[in-house]
Length: 446
Image (cartoon, rainbow, N blue to C red; front, top):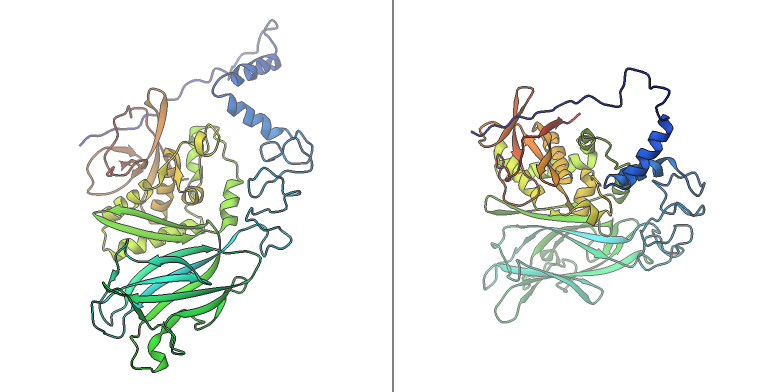
């Protein structure tokens, strides 16, 4: 077994001097000024500028430059939708195309989220038990739901699990929105429309949904429909279970990843105010051990997401080690992107909620995400920072304390933490890329 141990070397700080400076020495103020000027010319200069911005308030509006979207305009400091117009003069703060004075929610673009749970082909008819269904808004077809172009393969009179989430961006200037659901048995010639409406002789269901109070009325008002309830025996009846809710457009995220030859799907409806609160926090890194502070195992959103991932693992009877690899595969499925491209900064470590909403991150972002999930689910983990991994760059990864795993691991306080690479699909726990890992430093969650 390949074994690598982390080594942390401490060097004497040359700025901590015991003796007093001589009278001929330049003043410390002069040295500091010269140092700042020199550092501003180096790649690390952005860090110095960040420190200066943190202290300065150029427009005197009480908001420091580091937090002020308009540091030289005393009348503006925030830009909610990021369109370049300050919130005080922006007529459309959520940038959804509707003025704030007529928008039901001026700050967020509202959407309707459908959760389709299951379908039961309750009446056996000629042909195979295959089906698809369509969702309409008014007379416009929004989407046909099937199995990547083929019908769903079900059994007669046995509920077929769908677990499908679908988001519809609706006009925010009206509270009522009309939808229609149509279910078909798939046939080679003409698809057979199946009866979902138990109230009359129509087959599809039509209802009006209210964005504000999140209720719906019409052919259905509770999310369960059964065509047999109309007692018309000559109709091909079916059942469907679904739910409808109001959300903020763009914050319902669906993740798809593969593990062990099987595809997994999970959706989560994020609260944009929680996301915004993380974005607004200080993301500066003053020392390497600041990175681990971005792990949030106490966060309620991350606890719910981790529990959802765990339930899926349990439903598939995964062992502890299999679940760890399954979690690693989930994190690896997120897009890799460097901070200077996605955030416009040289270094912008993301909190786990940010990484999941943005659906991307670099090595430290995805590592912190995996550590957070692992810690919530009881898997002891550490952040592995390798400052000299490559000739011109460092690297970050995760160490997982697991039994019965082979491969590269690091030791800390008597525990063995197996290397986990989060930045690309396919890496197994214990496998490590070709790099110089001798400078690795391990940071446990505080």
